[in-house]
Amino acid sequence: MKKVLNFISISNIKCLVLLLLLLFVYTFICAFSYVNAVSTDIQDSVFRLHVIANSDSKEDQNLKYIVRDKVLEYINSVSNDLDSKEDVINLANENIDEIQKIAEKTIQENGYNYSVKLNIGNFAFPTKTYGDISFPAGFYDALKIEIGEAKGQNWWCVMFPPLCFVDVTSGIVPEESKQIIKENLSDEEYDLLSENNNEISFKFKIVEMFQNIGIKLAQS
Image 1 (tube, rainbow, N blue to C red):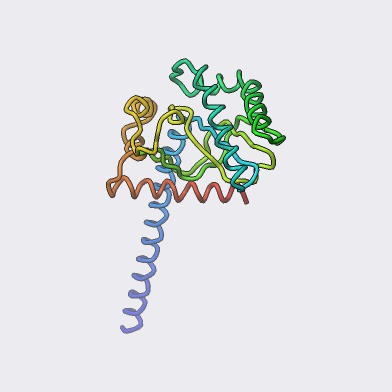
Image 2: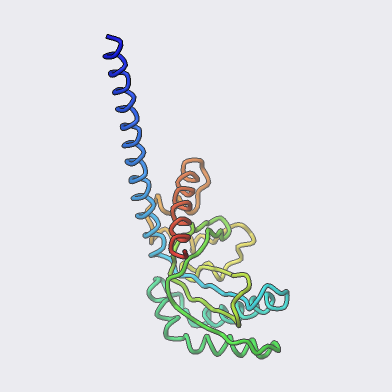
Protein backbone atom coordinates (compact mmCIF):
# COMPACT_ATOMS: atom_id res chain seq x y z
CA MET A 1 0.00 0.00 0.00
CA LYS A 2 2.82 2.40 0.87
CA LYS A 3 4.47 1.76 -2.50
CA VAL A 4 1.18 2.48 -4.24
CA LEU A 5 0.75 5.75 -2.32
CA ASN A 6 4.32 6.75 -3.14
CA PHE A 7 3.72 5.98 -6.82
CA ILE A 8 0.52 8.07 -6.81
CA SER A 9 2.32 10.92 -5.05
CA ILE A 10 5.19 10.88 -7.56
CA SER A 11 2.72 10.79 -10.43
CA ASN A 12 0.87 13.81 -9.01
CA ILE A 13 4.13 15.74 -8.71
CA LYS A 14 5.06 14.90 -12.30
CA CYS A 15 1.63 16.00 -13.49
CA LEU A 16 1.94 19.26 -11.54
CA VAL A 17 5.38 19.93 -12.98
CA LEU A 18 4.10 19.16 -16.48
CA LEU A 19 1.12 21.50 -16.03
CA LEU A 20 3.37 24.28 -14.75
CA LEU A 21 5.70 23.76 -17.69
CA LEU A 22 2.79 23.88 -20.15
CA LEU A 23 1.47 27.02 -18.44
CA PHE A 24 4.89 28.65 -18.74
CA VAL A 25 5.14 27.73 -22.44
CA TYR A 26 1.62 29.03 -23.07
CA THR A 27 2.36 32.29 -21.24
CA PHE A 28 5.62 32.70 -23.16
CA ILE A 29 3.88 32.13 -26.51
CA CYS A 30 1.12 34.61 -25.62
CA ALA A 31 3.66 37.21 -24.49
CA PHE A 32 5.77 36.69 -27.61
CA SER A 33 2.71 36.99 -29.88
CA TYR A 34 1.64 40.19 -28.08
CA VAL A 35 5.11 41.72 -28.34
CA ASN A 36 5.46 40.76 -31.99
CA ALA A 37 2.10 42.27 -32.94
CA VAL A 38 2.53 45.49 -30.95
CA SER A 39 6.16 46.03 -31.93
CA THR A 40 5.45 45.45 -35.62
CA ASP A 41 2.62 48.00 -35.63
CA ILE A 42 4.66 50.62 -33.78
CA GLN A 43 7.77 50.11 -35.91
CA ASP A 44 5.73 50.18 -39.13
CA SER A 45 4.34 53.59 -38.15
CA VAL A 46 7.63 55.33 -37.37
CA PHE A 47 10.53 56.77 -39.41
CA ARG A 48 13.52 57.98 -37.41
CA LEU A 49 16.68 60.06 -37.81
CA HIS A 50 19.95 58.69 -36.45
CA VAL A 51 23.10 60.83 -36.32
CA ILE A 52 26.41 59.34 -35.16
CA ALA A 53 29.39 61.52 -34.23
CA ASN A 54 32.96 60.84 -35.34
CA SER A 55 34.01 60.32 -31.70
CA ASP A 56 33.01 61.15 -28.14
CA SER A 57 35.29 64.20 -27.95
CA LYS A 58 33.56 67.43 -26.99
CA GLU A 59 34.35 68.93 -30.39
CA ASP A 60 32.97 65.98 -32.37
CA GLN A 61 29.87 65.81 -30.24
CA ASN A 62 29.24 69.51 -30.75
CA LEU A 63 29.74 69.07 -34.52
CA LYS A 64 27.16 66.28 -34.48
CA TYR A 65 24.53 68.67 -33.13
CA ILE A 66 25.42 71.36 -35.66
CA VAL A 67 25.02 68.86 -38.51
CA ARG A 68 21.75 67.67 -36.99
CA ASP A 69 20.35 71.18 -36.81
CA LYS A 70 21.27 71.99 -40.42
CA VAL A 71 19.79 68.72 -41.72
CA LEU A 72 16.57 69.17 -39.74
CA GLU A 73 16.30 72.78 -40.90
CA TYR A 74 16.43 71.60 -44.51
CA ILE A 75 14.06 68.68 -44.01
CA ASN A 76 11.57 70.92 -42.24
CA SER A 77 11.70 73.42 -45.13
CA VAL A 78 10.78 70.79 -47.75
CA SER A 79 8.46 68.53 -45.77
CA ASN A 80 5.29 70.53 -46.52
CA ASP A 81 3.31 68.94 -43.70
CA LEU A 82 3.66 65.37 -44.95
CA ASP A 83 1.13 63.12 -43.25
CA SER A 84 2.41 59.58 -43.79
CA LYS A 85 5.55 57.60 -43.11
CA GLU A 86 5.82 56.63 -46.76
CA ASP A 87 5.79 60.29 -47.82
CA VAL A 88 8.61 61.11 -45.40
CA ILE A 89 10.70 58.15 -46.61
CA ASN A 90 10.13 59.20 -50.22
CA LEU A 91 11.16 62.75 -49.31
CA ALA A 92 14.37 61.48 -47.70
CA ASN A 93 15.18 59.31 -50.72
CA GLU A 94 14.49 62.09 -53.21
CA ASN A 95 16.64 64.56 -51.29
CA ILE A 96 19.38 62.30 -49.97
CA ASP A 97 22.05 63.85 -52.22
CA GLU A 98 21.11 67.34 -51.03
CA ILE A 99 21.11 66.21 -47.39
CA GLN A 100 24.59 64.76 -47.94
CA LYS A 101 25.82 68.06 -49.43
CA ILE A 102 24.39 70.02 -46.50
CA ALA A 103 26.10 67.72 -43.97
CA GLU A 104 29.43 67.85 -45.81
CA LYS A 105 29.29 71.64 -46.21
CA THR A 106 28.43 72.10 -42.53
CA ILE A 107 31.37 69.94 -41.49
CA GLN A 108 33.77 71.85 -43.75
CA GLU A 109 32.49 75.24 -42.57
CA ASN A 110 33.26 74.19 -39.02
CA GLY A 111 36.88 73.34 -39.86
CA TYR A 112 36.72 69.55 -40.27
CA ASN A 113 37.22 67.25 -43.24
CA TYR A 114 35.25 64.23 -42.04
CA SER A 115 33.42 62.13 -44.59
CA VAL A 116 29.66 61.66 -44.33
CA LYS A 117 27.78 58.42 -45.00
CA LEU A 118 23.98 58.44 -45.41
CA ASN A 119 21.84 55.33 -45.44
CA ILE A 120 18.10 54.73 -45.37
CA GLY A 121 17.29 51.32 -43.92
CA ASN A 122 16.10 49.31 -40.94
CA PHE A 123 18.24 49.68 -37.81
CA ALA A 124 18.25 48.66 -34.14
CA PHE A 125 17.27 51.36 -31.64
CA PRO A 126 17.23 51.33 -27.83
CA THR A 127 14.24 52.55 -25.82
CA LYS A 128 13.98 56.30 -26.24
CA THR A 129 11.74 58.92 -24.61
CA TYR A 130 10.64 62.11 -26.36
CA GLY A 131 8.87 64.32 -23.83
CA ASP A 132 5.97 62.23 -22.53
CA ILE A 133 6.12 59.67 -25.37
CA SER A 134 8.40 56.60 -25.15
CA PHE A 135 9.26 54.29 -28.03
CA PRO A 136 10.36 50.76 -27.05
CA ALA A 137 13.59 49.23 -28.27
CA GLY A 138 13.35 47.56 -31.64
CA PHE A 139 14.17 47.72 -35.33
CA TYR A 140 12.96 50.92 -36.99
CA ASP A 141 13.20 52.38 -40.48
CA ALA A 142 15.49 55.39 -40.31
CA LEU A 143 17.78 57.82 -42.08
CA LYS A 144 21.24 57.20 -40.61
CA ILE A 145 23.95 59.86 -40.87
CA GLU A 146 27.46 58.68 -39.96
CA ILE A 147 30.10 61.36 -39.49
CA GLY A 148 33.74 60.36 -40.03
CA GLU A 149 34.56 57.11 -38.23
CA ALA A 150 31.12 57.13 -36.57
CA LYS A 151 32.53 55.89 -33.25
CA GLY A 152 30.90 58.53 -31.05
CA GLN A 153 27.63 58.74 -29.20
CA ASN A 154 24.35 58.62 -31.13
CA TRP A 155 21.56 61.14 -31.42
CA TRP A 156 18.04 60.01 -32.32
CA CYS A 157 14.73 61.62 -33.12
CA VAL A 158 11.49 60.68 -34.88
CA MET A 159 10.93 62.23 -38.31
CA PHE A 160 7.48 60.68 -38.56
CA PRO A 161 5.41 61.31 -36.55
CA PRO A 162 7.18 64.70 -36.47
CA LEU A 163 8.93 64.75 -33.09
CA CYS A 164 12.27 66.06 -34.40
CA PHE A 165 10.88 69.55 -34.67
CA VAL A 166 9.47 69.97 -31.16
CA ASP A 167 11.06 70.99 -27.88
CA VAL A 168 10.88 67.75 -25.90
CA THR A 169 12.80 69.28 -22.97
CA SER A 170 9.45 70.63 -21.79
CA GLY A 171 8.36 67.04 -21.15
CA ILE A 172 5.29 67.43 -23.37
CA VAL A 173 4.81 66.42 -27.00
CA PRO A 174 2.33 68.69 -28.88
CA GLU A 175 -1.18 67.33 -29.33
CA GLU A 176 -0.94 67.49 -33.14
CA SER A 177 2.05 65.14 -33.06
CA LYS A 178 0.24 62.80 -30.68
CA GLN A 179 -2.80 62.83 -32.96
CA ILE A 180 -0.71 61.56 -35.86
CA ILE A 181 0.59 58.75 -33.65
CA LYS A 182 -2.96 57.89 -32.58
CA GLU A 183 -4.14 57.73 -36.18
CA ASN A 184 -1.49 55.13 -37.00
CA LEU A 185 -1.83 52.91 -33.91
CA SER A 186 -4.50 51.09 -31.96
CA ASP A 187 -5.65 52.57 -28.65
CA GLU A 188 -3.63 50.01 -26.67
CA GLU A 189 -0.49 50.61 -28.72
CA TYR A 190 -0.80 54.36 -28.25
CA ASP A 191 -1.37 53.89 -24.51
CA LEU A 192 1.77 51.75 -24.42
CA LEU A 193 3.79 54.72 -25.68
CA SER A 194 2.17 57.42 -23.59
CA GLU A 195 0.78 56.04 -20.32
CA ASN A 196 2.53 55.38 -17.02
CA ASN A 197 0.01 53.26 -15.08
CA ASN A 198 1.25 49.96 -13.68
CA GLU A 199 -0.45 47.68 -16.22
CA ILE A 200 0.77 49.64 -19.24
CA SER A 201 4.25 50.01 -17.74
CA PHE A 202 4.43 46.23 -17.25
CA LYS A 203 3.41 45.62 -20.87
CA PHE A 204 5.99 48.18 -22.04
CA LYS A 205 8.67 46.31 -20.08
CA ILE A 206 7.64 43.04 -21.75
CA VAL A 207 7.93 44.61 -25.19
CA GLU A 208 11.24 46.22 -24.24
CA MET A 209 12.66 42.95 -22.88
CA PHE A 210 11.78 40.88 -25.95
CA GLN A 211 12.99 43.55 -28.36
CA ASN A 212 16.31 43.93 -26.54
CA ILE A 213 16.79 40.15 -26.74
CA GLY A 214 16.02 40.30 -30.46
CA ILE A 215 18.52 43.11 -31.00
CA LYS A 216 21.29 41.25 -29.12
CA LEU A 217 20.63 38.06 -31.10
CA ALA A 218 20.69 39.98 -34.39
CA GLN A 219 23.98 41.67 -33.50
CA SER A 220 25.71 38.54 -32.21
